Image 1 (cartoon, rainbow, N blue to C red):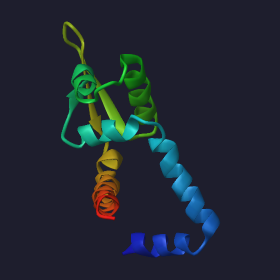
Image 2 (image 1 turned 180 degrees about the vertical axis):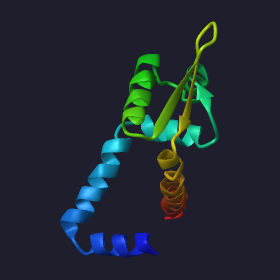
Image 3 (image 1 turned 60 degrees about the vertical axis):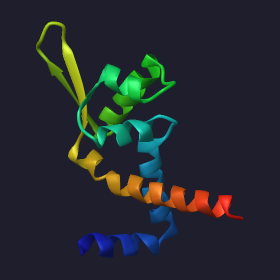
Length: 119
């Protein structure tokens, strides 16, 4: 209930609305962050698994995007003391809540595609 009240207050002020929107865009900017988050919604992944599932991403770009997502508190990186060293990536609690945004985007995308194809 408190979230609804805060959202309604923010919606009444265009500068607050744009600020919140920019905060979101700063976290997910770029071509690869949403696919990374989308894959990690299904559970922990190692670097090579992410690279296999996201076709056409270079290892350098994947590493950069994972670091950005980690710095923004969306992804957690766990290093295991094994030989060879094993590293896993998973969503933080904040990152897991992003599924609401992705679900809304997917629903919109499906609806938009149908509207465009049936013109």
